Image (tube, rainbow, N blue to C red; front, side):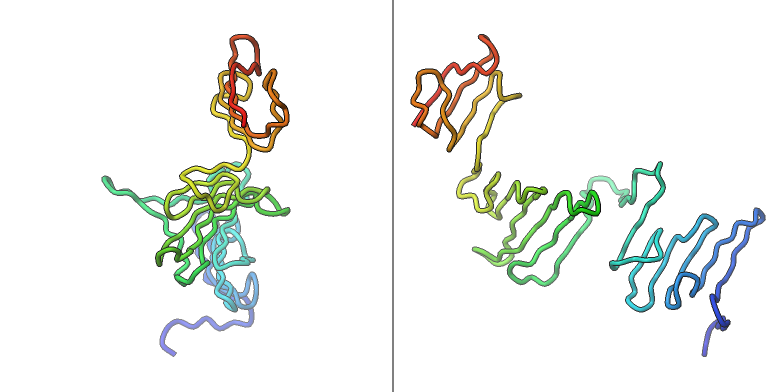
Length: 220
């Protein structure tokens, strides 16, 4: 064997101690028989589980390839990726290198043990051309926004046929009651004197004579 061998019955470690008696420990066995660790005076800082090579920063029980666990209550920033170079656009790359159809990469935003609060994802479609991909944004209620490879955007629609396709009521304005344009389908008309059976309409809403006052519209 060429190198330094520390062979003890349990918890072989190297202890670095400064004059203030603050210990930094590098070794194995302290947090499990097959784990390599770096511990500071305030606790574990870095851990590798030998059986699966999972890495933990701030945790000795990583459940994925890399787990960063920030438990300090007054620290809001968990991680930072910094690139100090001018006149360039820096990137953080997330890649599914398979390249097969219907493969992709999701960023899951989890707000608690009950499930994911939101998902930002890209899926490779290879349609109509190899390498084409679609992007989507989902919430707890399902896919909210879809952007196809050709730039078509769907709100509440997963396969938009136009540059913008909305499934539901759309309002253009600061609110739904004053100075706005409202486009609806499958909703009863409330425009004064109109046939309420018409379910598709465009409303022009003004605020000069009171909130939610319809000053014009198109029905069909």
